Each structure stands twice: as C-alpha cells, then as structure tokens.
Amino acid sequence: MEWQQLVGFYHLAKLGSFTGAARATYRTQSALSQQVKALEQEFQCRLVERISPRRLRLTVAGERLLEFAELLLREFELLGEDVAQLGGRSRGRLRVAAPFTTLYHLFPEVLRGYRTQYPEVELTILDRPRQRVVELVREGAVDFGLSLISEAPRDLEVTNWKRVETMLMTPRQHPLNQQEFIGLEDLARYPLILPPKTAHHSCRLRLEQGFRRLGLDYRVVMESSNVELSSLYVEQGLGISFATVVPGLPALQRRALAFRPLKGLFESDQIAVLTRRNKRLSEHKRAFLDLLLGMDVRREA
Image (cartoon, rainbow, N blue to C red; front, top):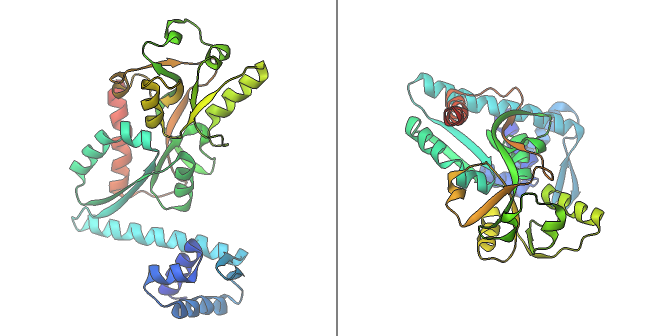
C-alpha cells in the first residue's frame, strides 16, 4: 500500500466521485481508478461500489480502510505541526465551526487574542448551523465545533463553555414587558417570528406543542433561522420572537429590545466546545482551547 493510493482513496470516499477526487489530488480519473484497483487487489476485496453513474458508496471493508486513512492523515498533519514547532516555527492550521450568532457575539475577542499569540497559524472559521457543526467535528473537517450541549452526541468530547437561556425577545415598550408572569396564552396573542418548522428547531416544536395542547390559535408572520434577522424585525414591531442567548451579553443591551427568560417553558442550556474523542491536540490547538475557556473564567471571576 502506497501513500498516494491511500490519499486518493480518502478523497474518493469523502467526495463521492472520481471526478472530484481526481481534481483534489491533481491526478487523472484513470490514474485514480488504478490506485483504487491496486488497493482492492492488495486487500483482495471490493472497497467501492458504484450504485449509479454518478454515485459511489464504500463497502464494509472500504469503511474500515477509510477509518484507517483518516487516522493516518490526521497523525501526519500533527507530525508536520510538531516538527515545525520543534524548529521554532508556529506554523499550523486551526479550523473552527460555530453558528453565526456565536461567531458574531462571542468570538471576536477570542480570535483577536489568539492571532496576537499565534500569528503564523492558518485560521479557518466556518459559519454553520449547529447540526452541521456536529457533522464537521465527526468528519474531522474541523478541530473544534461549538454547539449546544443538549444537541451534542455522546461519541464526541464535550467541554462546557457558556450558559445560555432561551428568552422572549420583544420591543422594549411591548405590553408583555409589564407582566410579571408570561405564559403560552400570552404569547399566542401576538404575531410570532419563529424559525422554520424542522426537527432541528426545538424551540418552535416545544411552543407549537404547547399551543396545541391548550387549544390556542396563533399566527406566524415570519420564519427565519437567523436570530439577528429576527431581532431586526422584532425591533420594527412586526412580531415577537425567541433567542437562545448568553444572559447579560453587552451587545444585546445596546439594542432596542427586551429579553425575558421563560424558565417555565424552556430549560437553560450550555454552549459546548466539541472535539473528537481521544484527539491529540498540538500546542497551538491546545492554546486556543485554553484561551477560549480561560477568557470565560476571567470574565465570570
């Protein structure tokens, strides 16, 4: 088994086509096909099955080889980073994925501090929905992902970062802000700005289940999965909405909005840092995690 054969197979498995894998490895499709055939001959079994003219899938043996290839390629990347650091150079890569709101409100200070300490590190920051963040961590496409701990799967390493609450978001002068207690009956009286109706948006699912249980009529005037967009239209008086936010975040206090906790309807949660289990972190990646968690400790002290 040769190194280039393994690299070619890895890209074929990840991209799902000979065209994409050949482009990624700067080889012809014919050369890549020969590499895969050589691997199959060496292992004396099929690694890839063609299920349509444009679609491939791995066999059970292919899945096992992919696990090995992923491990080997990660270790090779870490070796390069370790050797560079031993030579006095801070070269390396850091890939982080998080939802837009987390990147917008919580990351700028962390990234400024990190870039000052590690200016040579090649940073890649991905704005992705929480569910996609989990997938990217699982695939090894990013080093760190940030998502809610309630949505974190058990097969990943989870480190708590910040407590968050799902809050009612209204204009500051809204009548609901004068009430001591807010129930489902109160919420149903006003136009609602909610995320799309999918299984990934548990806030909407829980609200609508509550409305139906009580036989309440309600009206959704806007659907948006972007909290920043929803907040803009809440400020304009289109409707009321909900946001999972860090309590007391200064950036939110500067808006013409009021945030009310709804502890009777929603439980508190945590933003968590996700990594693959048993993943060895190089120095510059460990430093990022320490900086991320350390800044939060200092702020709470």
